[in-house]
Structures are given as structure tokens and as C-alpha cells.
Amino acid sequence: MARSRSRKGLAVLCLVLVPIAGRGQSLPDTLELAYDDGEPVDTLYLGDASLFAMRFSPPAFPVRLLAAKYFLRDTSHGTSFRLSVHEDNSGEPANVLYGPVAVTGGVLGWNELDLRPYNWILERDFHLVFGLDGKSILELGAEDRAPLSGRASLGDCCGWWRASVDLLIRAKIELLPAGLRSGCGAEPPTEFRISAFPNPSNGCISFRIISPEAGWALVVYTVDGRLLRRWDQTGAEGLSRVVFWDGTDLRGREVASGTYLARLVSHGRVLASCKFVVLR
Image 1 (cartoon, rainbow, N blue to C red):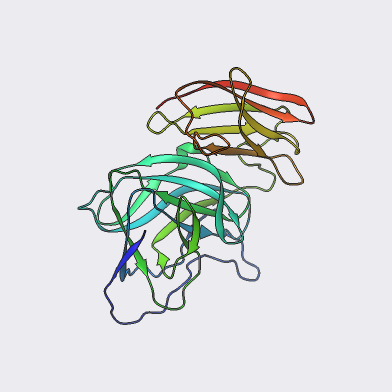
Image 2: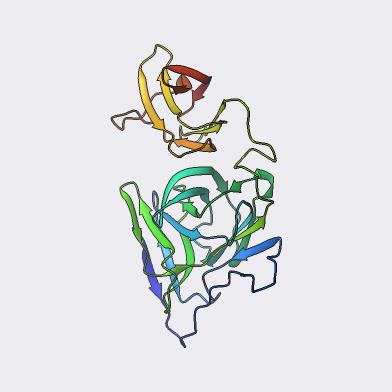
């Protein structure tokens, strides 16, 4: 659970620092999306298996995520965490689009994590989600002064709930030319592809899926054909995305270390497949 420590001071108007073009003006290529005024009065303490997130709404799409910024009030209990990018579902984090990425080495005050090497492209509102790794108790700056943006969420294994603060988390983005698709570069994909990226520290898998059309499902099997998990793609058009699997079966039980099979299927056809290894 999250706990907060408040240090009240002079009330300051909370500004939304999202640059917006005026009449006859064009948007700059690079923006920093911020929903705080940069003066934390609270500290959020998040323990193992806790999550916190901020939702971001770029003024245009698509965008490339260049960096994540976050403010640490204290580093004595550790600074490591896992960062991931999630879809938005009515204001709450939903499916994992990218990550998780292990982050270490934070300092007091503002930190900036360079995300340009990952080439993460986004086409709609997104959440930056900070997940604890069991090694640190992250102490993140927050604001409880009105007006609040309502964009901060706290979560655990059971779900998400709206936070009564604004978290000092910001996103730097680059506005891209119209027509770029998530994870595809300048040209849309012409064939189905699937890749698996195991996380050796916790048995989780990230699947990168490239698809030229909609209507597919991702299915994970044992090598002898027993169904473990299934995710159905939704939407009116093809997507290129990342699906995150926590290494559990349909009953929530952890699968053992070993070799498994992932398939993209549609109406009984196998569109693409790959073998991968779960490590625990």
C-alpha cells in the first residue's frame, strides 16, 4: 500500500505545463508533458508489488517517447524500480505496451531516464507505470494542492485506484509525421511476426507482435500442446504492440522453467509462432 507524508506550505497554483499551439502557431517537435508545478509537498512510499502511474495526453499523434522524468524526495531506502508503458482505459492503466525496463541509480530531486534507444512509438494516451522490484522502497515526490489533474493512479495485484495527489512524473515526447505506426517505423507491416523476450529475474515474458491486420489472438502453449494463456486483439485495424505475460496459467499458477510455444492465430490459422524459454 502507498503511504504519504505531507509537509504543508504556501498554496501555489498547480499549472498544467503541456505546450498547446495557439491560432496560427505550429507545435514544436519536442515537448515535455507535465501536470505538476514542480514543488512536491508529499512523499509517496511504495513497497514491494506496488505500482504508481501518471497518464499523459499528447496534443497530437503519433509520438516517440524520448524520456521519463521523476522526482525523488529521499534515496536512503533505494532508488531502483521497473518502468513500463501502458495503454489507457478510461483513465486507468491497461495493457502493457512496452517494458518493463529495470531502472537504477536515482538521485535526490529530478531524474531523467533516456528512453530514445527503445524507439517507443505511441498513438494514443498512455501511462508511465513505476513498478517496485523488491529491492527498494521508492520515495517519490507528489503534490496535493488544488487543482489536481486526476491523472495519477496507484495499483497492486488486485487493480488500480485513483490517487488523491499529482505525482511528479513527466514525459518528454517527439511529435512524429502522421502515418507512422507503433513499432513499425515509417512503413506499415506486411506480414505477421512474433518475438519473445524473457526476463531472467522473474519468469515474465514480453511478446513483441507485428501485424498487418486485426482479428488475431496470441496463445501460449506447453510444448505438448496444453493451453496456458490467451489474449485476443481488439480494434478495427491491425496493430503492432507488446503483450506482457506474468508467467502464470489460466488458473493463476506460475509455470515452471522450460521451453514453451507462442502462436498468433486467426480463425483456426496459425499466422506466426515462436519458441521461448521461461527462466526462474
